[in-house]
Image (spheres, rainbow, N blue to C red):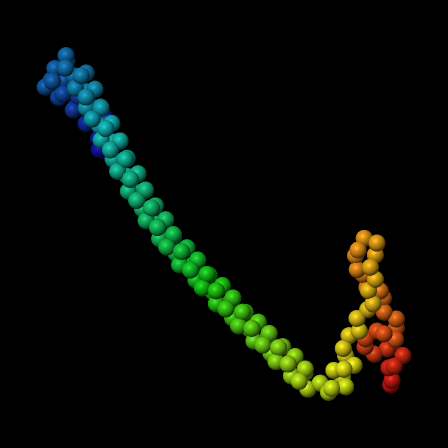
Length: 149
């Protein structure tokens, strides 16, 4: 820690023995050892606190980056949803316009022939009404035999 060689430590021990005396030297050495231990713990605590603060700063930066990325993704998703909704609305409007145009341009004879024939209904014993099948001449639409080339 202090880069003291063994010979230097031996000289310090001899001087301490002469100055402090042999009776008080073990007590003083114990006290100095405790103080050095406390100083080392304090230094390690300060180091760990600094490391923790650095990690917290890094985590805060990472959190800010993630929040910015999340906001960007959310904006992209909302934009895509708006665009898709707009396209769907345009498609629905176009289909509705085409249907209205077809209904308005149908001749009266086609409109009359395209009306559906309702099948006769029968009532069962339980009171449930069910439709009877239509005969081929009652069916709506062109008959398969009527196709011409």
